[in-house]
Amino acid sequence: MESNGVVQVLFEEEKTLVRLKIKEPDTEKEKYWPQITTILIANLAGLTEGLHFSWPSPFIVKITQDKENYDISEEQASYFNTITPLAMALCCPIFSKLADRIGRKKTLLLISVPHILAWIIKAFATSVYAFYVARFLTGAANACSFSVLPIYMGEISHPSIRGTWGNALPISMCLGELLINIIGSYFGVQVTSFICLPVCVLFIILFCYCPESPYFYVMKGRYEEAKKSLYYLKRKRNLDNEFAQLKFDVERQLSESSNWSDVFKINSNRRALAAGLFLRFTQQTSGMGVFLVYTQYIFQKSGGNISHETSSIVYFAISLVCYLIALFSIVKRFGRKSCYVVSLTLTTLVLYLMGTYFYLDSHNIVDLSSWKWIPIVSMIAHQVFLSFGIAVIPTLMLSELFSASIKAKAMPILMAEFGIGNIIMNTIFYYLNAKVGFYAPFYFFAICCTIAMFIAIYVIPETKGKTLEEIQQLLKRK
Image 1 (spheres, rainbow, N blue to C red):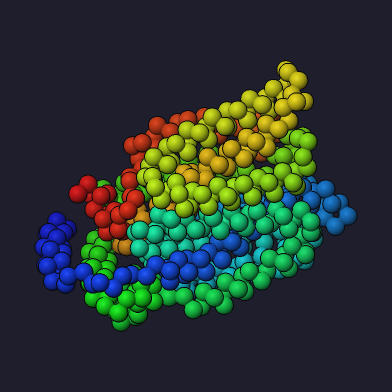
Image 2 (spheres, rainbow, N blue to C red; image 1 turned 30 degrees about the horizontal axis):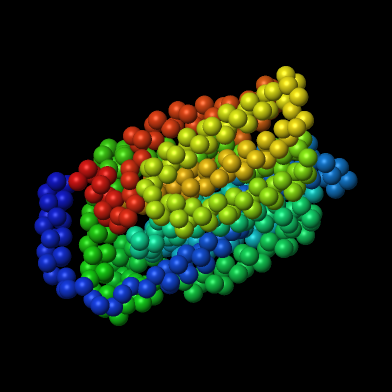
């Protein structure tokens, strides 16, 4: 057999020949609206994800205080936030494997099964164990959407729109987080479940008409179906050039060794994995995941002049606006690395401010009665600074970093780390709050972000405006 080096040289020579054979550019322009429409439909799953993910925000307070219908303590309810990421870590390898076996589209349609079951169980649950089962099912759906949806969006979108619409998942999740806090503020667990359930049905109906990823079809040698998928997404009659380049890029990536050891041994894979692990871990250590599920709890503890329900709605509404601004402006205009480093820096400052406020408040060092606005303003500022970096860049870049040959192996590693990190951060938040003081978790997250600011400069590659194949060559330092 030829060595990998010889194979790579042959591919480089073939690539030159392929490009020589490609005709002059067509006058017919590629249409972007089918790609955007497909991404929006796919992210109905992300909307449901947000509804489920922040479900504890309004309902931890309600369930623990409602002793007539539920006999659930605050400590028991705290496990709502650790069971979900545990399920993510356990189920991600299954969905990553399915994405390469049965396709991205069919795997994403499977999200609806745990989503629907979780809403039904929550609607009729009375014991804490029923809620635990529902949260586990939510984590299983999370594993599918976080591991497969970014890949699907990256493979169906042109590089010029991927920087914008590749962030649709965190945007749709933020919309879901806002809606669950609004609905949960006015309705109980059962009615909320029945209101949210139709979103899952709508996703199934609309996504059935969306195309499979052309990357997947080329991987399976189903070239005619790949051409049909490309036509649906680009709406061009002459797709010879695009198909030839796609076929070559996918086959070159698949020609690379794809053993588990190669994820760590091959330099480009190792760099991609290091960047992915860093992005997902710093997302957790920024406090983002913890704040999303403890939002109303944090506002209740801060004792502001506005009710915790209203504060959470304002918080998520402003967050959504910030995410949309980041989607259409900041991330599109600036590089991935610079956005992430600036986001980390500003988030660090806010976390130190919040920690200091709660420290002074808990020790009664100074009178803070005229400063009760600081918690909500700080929480909003925290979300603003997350919106153009920490909250969106990891999901966007995970659709870009990995070669077709190792995606199915790299994503379970990243999601396991994401799930375990989420469990650890929620546990740390609960433990530091209970044993040290409410200020301690904020100082912990601030210190983590301080360290991450400097590491980010060396770990994160710049992928803005590059095709998936160009990113692979960048990771190989070519």
